[in-house]
Image (tube, rainbow, N blue to C red; front, side):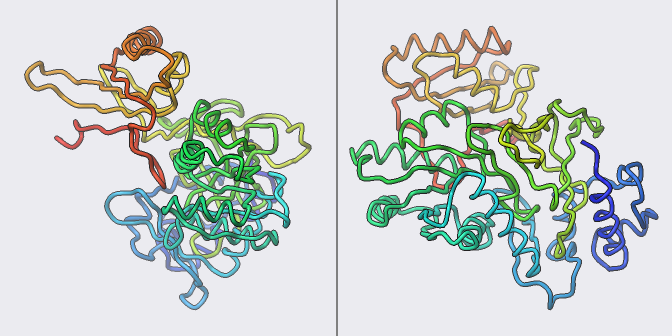
Length: 415
């Protein structure tokens, strides 16, 4: 997908505005002689930007407007080292709400819905983004934030919430708790807008079956506004992204070269009109592909396929590169295995070898011993690595109100 003439004009304006200022990227572009964008070839001369740049510019080095134009800051979650701080202008906040409202509308959500918002508020972009889009839509926001599952369920019942906004981990927790209590008939949810972390097909099916709701993937990241820059339409898996605000590339994460539409790679995003902290060619590390052709829903916005994982989530064991998505694909082949698992990587000093420990929750229909053997066989057959498998009952592994960490590598900690 090549940048359109209109997109190139907006990118040119961003470059000229940055070069005229004194921000981190303004200085960088001036030093490299990048002053304007007149063609697709010029665009590809723009260097990739990264989260490392944002940490180097901490706290507000990427701010591209005067202080008096900044109305809010947000910070990304789940990172180590210096946090990433993103300033927003009034227009940035409004633009984000416009995109989020589009997401709700694309999911068939209206101002008659009652939207139960469980993602966190504060520095994290999630909660306030879900709420701003809800208010712009004119629907009733129930701004719960994370935690206190008892109160979440009580408010869900009493207020007859119709839409659940959550991470997939917390949606799973709520689904399990509601069914454990036998109160699903008291829940009025019809749709779920799920974001912040990738989720497997099996986990999606479990939440769908447990709550009986239509599920939607919402996409976004703090550096690029937050959640709400894309969502799938009913009946489809691919997510429409708003190309009047963003230009999206897919690159080979190793070479940095663009790949053809339809091929999988790393998502790179350019903000076309963002004021507070415009980012050009920002490497998200999210892995997906641009779905070619037009969607049967009639919407013209380009589509990203389901996020497969992150290029920096890859782990290597016994010479094999693996992603969490591959673990989930293998488990989906095994009868009785659920979507919940944990991977632990360690090093056995006495044998001088790495160890791949895999703990999986079993439904209970299949003997745990047989299931463990089946899982080990599937991994050996399809991936070429045999994990040490432990099966535990459903509910044994910890649930999360935010994102769930499924891979722990103690080898890195030792280093």
